[in-house]
Image 1 (cartoon, helix red, strand yellow):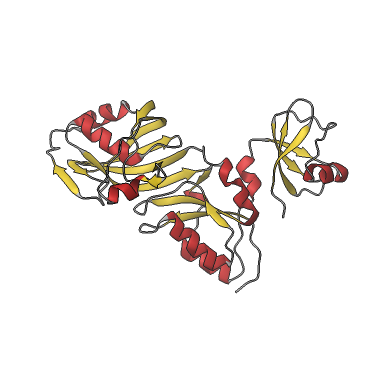
Image 2 (cartoon, one colour):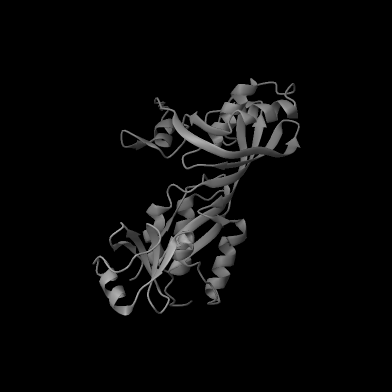
Length: 294
């Protein structure tokens, strides 16, 4: 066991059967800290990229909510379920034998770009203070308004079986791949459900950045676990380095009138290279937006 204090980001390759909260609970035990949160909930059946924020990095979670994501999804035709995925109760079985690969590709293209999508009942969205999946489990269905989402890239990567296709989907916040499977099945007239889902990108991270829970456990036990620095999330922002006096004022919330960055949003560092936080330049002064120091 190590007494190391962790601050930064862990990209976890979430296993199937775990909720996102299960992953956080597991990491709290491994890292011996309760200051942990995640960005971008994954369903228990889904696997893949789950960015987890530890220590001071948790202050960045609210800034990650609008990040785009990318998935590899397997869509099975010929089924309709109450959850819109393979884990739900089967409501209908339909004949999908007449659907060709060309027909599937053509139907899929209709969902590329900006569309309106109805959120599924089995989701964490709240209506009247209650999560939709809680209402669904009690047999209650409520009206959901269609919401604008965007699929930037949507294409077939392979045909897994006669009625199962793997699809790559790069999408905006709020897009549901289960709803895409259901809507696509309806468009083809045979029904469709999500059979498997793997998130391959989130918050600018990919599977290459991920560790499994057993790997994290082993590295932590050996005292070799290192987290990704939180400023990596803002690599596209302008960089500003302050003097010691400017650093003191910035960290105390005072505007820096003499500091004139080239962009509105800035990563701010001390003269020793330590990441202090994020700043905003309004054309007159650099002001503190969010600090990441203890």
